[in-house]
Structures are given as C-alpha cells and as structure tokens.
Image 1 (cartoon, rainbow, N blue to C red):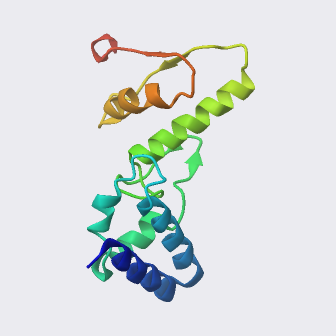
Image 2: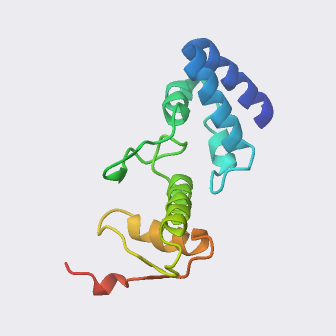
Length: 146
C-alpha cells in the first residue's frame, strides 16, 4: 500500500477512535511524515502506519513531550511525545533561542550530558548543528568523573 494511502487510513482511524485528540495526533503524524520535521525518519514511521499500531501512534503523537523542572523526560521512541533525536534537536534549538534573548552579551555555550544511556551521543551529534550560530564546546567523555 502506498505511504500516502496508509497515512490517510491511519489518520482516519485515529480521528474515529480518539475523536478530537485523535485528529490532533493525526495532524502531528502527517507533519512528521511530510519531511518538514528534522530527523523524523518518515520512512521508518511509514512501517507503523497500520491499525495494529494505532494505540502506539496515538500515544506517540497525541501531545508534545512536556518540559518540566527536570527537562524533558519520557519513553524513547518516535513522535513528539517521546524522547528522540527530533525532540532533542527542537529542545536544544528552543533553549538556544531563549539563551540568546536572555543573555545577548554571551557568545558561547558549554554542552554537557548525563552519564547514562545515549544522551552523550545525542548531545554531541545534535547540539553543534542546532545551536543557531552560538559557538559551543563540550567535555570529552574521559574527563567526566565516574
């Protein structure tokens, strides 16, 4: 089945089963599938555009992962309600925009990461390209205390 047809069917199923929140989830899914969202991997998402994955799609696209006092925390996966390269990139970009507005005299940024999971890989990979013109430097992994 063509990707656009599968997306159309899944969007309709989301709207029928989950009503207005389902329609909103379908709109987010369509945006991620359009190629306009960075690091969204629409070809991988297309493999899950089926009724079988409807509950996962709804939960993954029903909202944007909230930002709380501990940052963004949640399950890893695809969609805006999950921790993934897209959400990390958008969070870093938003944080840099905030820093530029709040501290216009500052011209650099140090980037750190938690010593667990893949956060160092995600930090190193995406922050330098998404800092929107703010020079950055990070700490080598071997310089962090154990």
